[in-house]
Image (cartoon, rainbow, N blue to C red):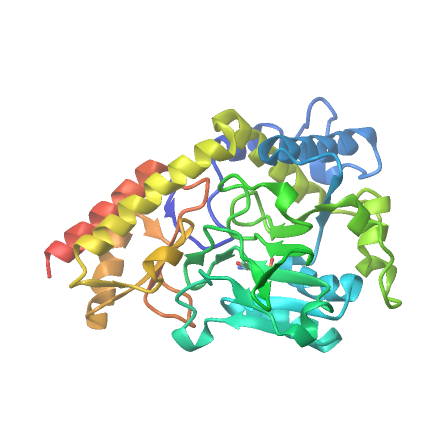
Length: 368
Ligand code: PMP
C-alpha cells in the first residue's frame, strides 16, 4: 500500500486510524448489516452517530449548554450567504483574504455590509493587531462582526480576538461571528467569546460536504429579519436538529470518527502543541535560509496551519518539487492567487511527515 505525505490545503489527509476504522466498518456498521451510507437518517442508529459527533465536539471545545451544534451542507461558502440573510444586513467585516472577501461580497448582495479593515493593499500578508476603528455613524447599526480566524490561502492567522473601537471606547456589544474553517479544532477556543462560528470539515475535522455551526441557541432561534426559504433558515435547522433535510450521513460519520480520534490523542491542547511543533520545524528552515526562501505572512500573523512562501529564485521551483516528489510529498504548491509554495499542517498531518518535508527544504536550501 502506498500512502503519500499529504500537505494539501483541504480536502486533505485523514488519520490512518480513522480510515482503517471506517474500512473495518465499511460493509457492516456495528452489526447493522449495512454501511452507514445505506442507513436511513431517521433511524436510531444514525441518530446515535449524529449524537456522538455532537458530543465529541462539545468535549473538544467545552461547548457551553446555551450553544447548539449544527451539521449543514453547502460548505462554508453557503454560510457567507446565510449569515446576512438571517442576522441582518449590516454586518461588519474584517477583510484578510479571499475567503473574507467572498463573505463580504455575499453580504453586500444582501445588504450594506461594511468592510471595517482590510490588508488587501499588503497582499493580505497580515491580520489586524490593533483595535479597529468603527465610524460613529455605523457603530450602533452593526448586526455582527465577521472575521476569518485563519486565512488558508495567504497563511495568516489571528492569535488574539479582534476588538472594535468607536470614539476612543471599546465597542463590546457587537456579536462576534467567525469563519474557523481552516483552524477548527486545531487549538483551544473559548466558545463563550463568540456568538457564532462555522467551519467546513474538510481541513481538520473530516471530509468535505459537512459544515459545522456552533452558535448561541438564542441566536439560532431567531426568525430571519426578512422572509427567506426554509432551507436557508438557521431556526429551521436548529429546530430539526440538522435533520430538516437529509444530512451528509457518511460525512458526519467520518467527522465523528475524526473527533473521537482527536479526543483519544489528547484533545485540542495536544493538537495545539503538536501543530506548533510542526509549524516551527518549517518556519525555522525558512528563517535560517532567508536568502533562499521568502515568507508571505508577517511574523506576528504567521499561521500554524498554512505556511506560505516563495523561492527567491523562482526558476528553482521545479527542482524543489522534484526533491519533494522523491519523498512522496504532495500538495505543497501555492494557491494560484499567491504563487510560490503552501504547506498545510492540519491535525492529521503527522510530525514525521513534517520532519521529512523540513529536511527536503533544508537540503534544497543547502544546494543553493
Ligand atoms: N473559508 C475558509 C477559511 C476556507 O479555507 C474555505 C475553503 N478553503 C472556505 C471558507 C470555503 O469553503 P467551502 O469550499 O467549504 O465553501
